[in-house]
Length: 258
Image (cartoon, rainbow, N blue to C red; front, side, top):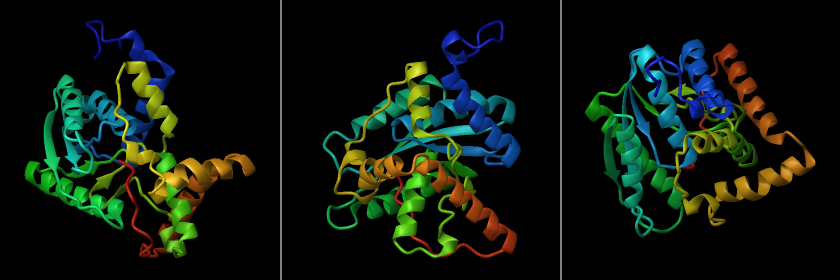
């Protein structure tokens, strides 16, 4: 928090912190990712992306009139997963934000991540309605966008499905969509935030995990800058569709990484 002089504490004046906060502020102020005065439900898993998002929104909220609250969703898929809600609760409490722990139950079997996503989004939308939130803020980054574009392209999505995720759509906002994952990790490290590690993010049973840890690195080895090119492809395709007023194609629904 700013000190008596109005200046930020030293560790908040680092380039790692400024980079993320500037990206979130620019998205809101110039592109309307979050409008002034909106009530925002922040979905936070406790990982580096959503933890960085929570802190950045909390620091930027006052001059923009944002009213923030936080929710964590426990899927009940791992022993002790409910404990993660306590870490997010502390993160919210330290920033004087209301917090709510949500629980869903997802049985094992095929398409586990898809079913977990559906249950999670239903719980978040119900909570948003309960608290009167205008939007739900998600911690997707540019890395998530690159992964999603690649999966859609290789799964046969139509050109209308290639734009993948938008910064704002259907009540969801993604203020970090132009920020790379390493920036959120650096942000947390600079501020002493200790993010949680979700082991499912590295589980090779899940398609997104294999794309993240095997396919993208292989592409980068052959085509340096492949991640960035995928993100640019999505943005260019989105602008093209907007210019021609084409409705979004059915595409492949994203599998959220948190």
